[in-house]
Length: 369
Image 1 (cartoon, rainbow, N blue to C red):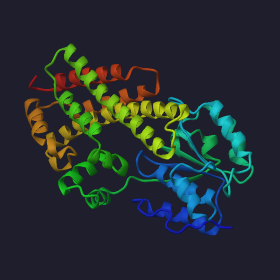
Image 2: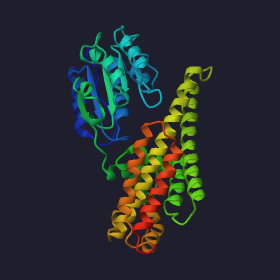
Image 3: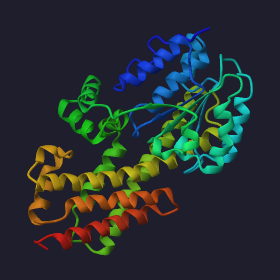
Image 4: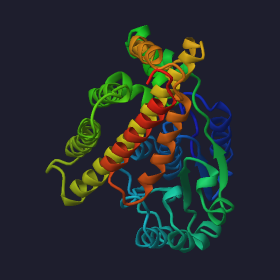
C-alpha cells in the first residue's frame, strides 16, 4: 500500500523542487532506502525529515502519521548525538533496530545527523545503509555534503535544502502577527533560516544574547578584565538559551506522559540543553562576525546591505571613530575561532580570545587609534 503524500509538506517554506521530488517518491512508492538532506541549519531539513518519515511509517493511517509527527510513534526514531558525536554504540543500536520488524507501522525510519558520525560509527552503518533489512529507511541530516564521509554520502540519495528567500520569511513572520519592521529585522538575522528568524522574533533568550553581543562588539577601550567579563556575559546568555530549551522539552514531554518526565526524558533534556547552549555560542560568534561585516559595508558606503538595521547609530559611530579599520578582517576572526567549538575547548575561552583578537585587529588597522 502506497503512503498518502497529500499535504505532507504544507506550511514548509522554500525548497519547492526538493519537496516536489519527495512528494513524488511518496506518491509513486519508489522510496530510496537512504536519503541525505543537506543544507545550512534551520532551512527545514529536520521538519521535512519528520514529515517524510511520518508518512512512511504510517502507511496511510492518518492517526499514526499525526503521532509520528509529534514524535510519539515507535517506528520513527531520531538519534540525538551524545555530545559532539553520534557514537558507535548508538549506531549499533540503530543497526539492530533496522533489522527488526516494525513495532506497529508499515516500516521503520531512522533520522541521524550524518555530520556527527566519526569513522568508526560510519563504518558500522555502511552495510545497513547499502542493504537495509525489512524496508527500513534512513534519513541523514548534514550542514553540507562535504561534512559527510564520502562512504556514507555515496550510499544515500542527496536532497539539497537552500536558504529560504528573505521575502518569504518576512511574510511568514507577518502572518504570525509580527509588525513589519520586527519581521524584516528577524528575517535578516535569520540568514535564510526560518527557524532562526522565528527565534529572533519570539525568543527572549536569543534577543538577550544579541544585546550582549552588541555591547561587547564595539567595546574596544576596556581592559582585559572587561573583555573577560564580556565573554562571561555572552556565555551566560548562551546558557540561558540552553536552559530554556531544556525546560521546553521537559514541558512537552510532561504534556504527553501523565506521570511526568522519566529519567530518560530528563537525560535527553539535558543533552538537548547542552546542544542548544553550544549552538548559542556558535550563533554568538556568527552575530559578532555579522556586526563587523555590517561595519565593513557601512565603511564602504553601502549601509543598505547591513543586517543590524536597528543598530545603525552604534555601527556608524564606531566606523567614524576608527577610519581605516579592517572590519572585514575582524569578521573573519570569528570563523577561525568558531572551528574550535568541535574540540574540547572552553566556549568562554573561545569568546574571550575572539574578542581580544578582533580588538587588536581593529585598533592596529585604524588610523584613528
